[in-house]
Length: 110
Image 1 (spheres, one colour):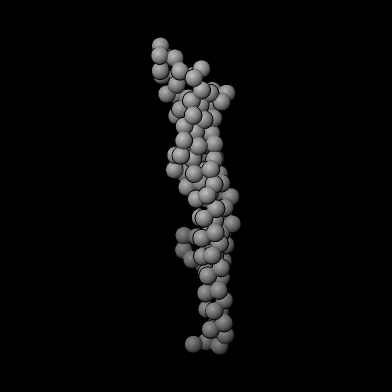
Image 2 (spheres, rainbow, N blue to C red; image 1 turned 90 degrees about the horizontal axis):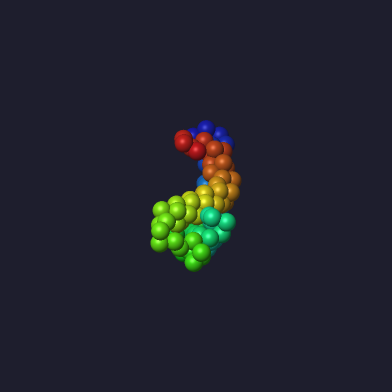
């Protein structure tokens, strides 16, 4: 082994352990987060967990028109999409710094 090789390996292991802790913390925060998306000026509201799991849909009775079910369906899709986008943005915010730090380890794909 070349001189000084061991400290570099220890440094990499410490850095990997730190990132593992950061990832676990970010994942826990995402699991606890709830994000809301709306459509139709708030007529339809979708709530998703930070993990992307759909938790709830709320529909204002004003949005229910038996003669126009398609509009309500579109509003539900739009609200869910809006909430999912908020979850994606939160995931990038929480996980981005951690994933960015992995490049310092020289790991392929990071």
